[in-house]
Amino acid sequence: MPHTFTRYEKLVVAMLAFLQFTIVLDFMIMGPLGALLLPALQITTQQFGLVVSAYAFSAGASGLLAAGFADRFDRKRLLLFFYAGFLLGTLLCGIANSYTFLLGARIVTGLFGGVIGSISMAIVADLFPLEVRGRVMGSVQTAFAASQVMGVPLGVFLSNHWGWHAPFLLIVLVSSCVGIVIIKQLRPIDAHLALQDRTGSFRHLGKTLRQGRYLRTFAATMLLATGGFMLMPFGSAFSVHNLGISLELLPIVYMVTGVTTFVAGPWIGRFSDKAGKYRTFCLGTGLAILIVPIYCNLGQSALALVIGLNVLLFLAITARIISASALISAVPEAADRGAFMAVNSSLQQLSGGVASGAAGLIVTQSADGRLEHYGTLGYVVVVAMLIVVALMYPIHRAVLSRLARLPAVPAAGAPG
Image (cartoon, rainbow, N blue to C red; front, side, top):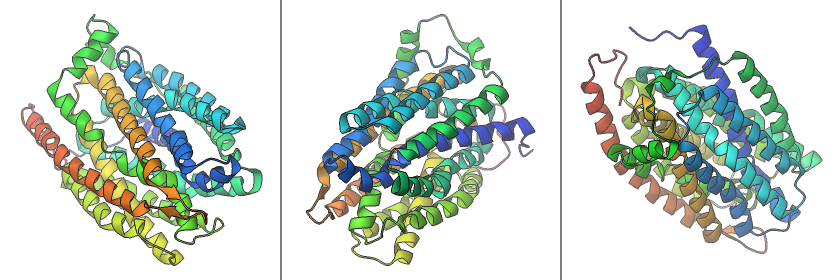
């Protein structure tokens, strides 16, 4: 029978979606703020790339440190601990008055915020069967779209009127409200504790790292974040200085793109449950490979064209994220889920940090503000996407093989 969501399950999905909204917004806002931060702090594109990648590097490091004990605690308590640290880091960003201060604040934010996504993934895998995880991931991943629909345009508006600090302070306010709801409404998630052995945290981490199928998955996900970390940090500067979109019109681009993705996200999730996660991933990748070279080599362009290409690109990215997340969630055993997700997220963040830093080295800014070599960046992203398609295929086959050996196969469509 098709899975029927209870009221509590719907509440959990909503809470995780709002939680992800605040985390994603904290990262997404850096792109639109780039056009303001470069002159305000008098920094170069290389320094701005380092500000973005600092979050990723610190998130990656904290993920590895947290992996050993990620399965040793109630996931609700673990989630609230790291969310509180994320709030502190974002508050520091909101009061930063120099490049060095901002860099340090992004490191603190990454140390705590980078682990939250893996805890959320573990919660989804704990509470929802695989045949509906695409739908759940589709709803949770609407956070990306919501951050564009509401967060990014509002962030740009606040920045234009009250300075670039304002969006971070807004995130702190919203995140505090989300934290209170989680404290009051989320039940303890501790069934995995009964599956733990008496080995120490480092032995548990070592056991996770020695699993061959886990290592293959880690290799694939290390490249998944490349597109976002390479293109998004310079997205607003490219739109303003290369495409000719004014700062006043930039929120419209993000808003239209976000509304479309917000509506399409849950539908893409359902499609991945029925048509197959890997198939959906390939379709999204194919569309992205078509759009990225065109977009990254554009010059002065009409607003309608820029919006249209952004919509298609983000639909493709959303399809890749939802399908890959749902497929990867089927890889770890229940007892290893927290450690696996933490390591997986950590490696993804670290590779994203390398990608962001590399993007800052590839892209340069001319005297008139134009970004040079953005097209080269697009070709690098395309190559990375093709490699991930190849790496995801054996993961897809392994998940299908594993499910085939289970006593009962879920009836709701193709899982892979």
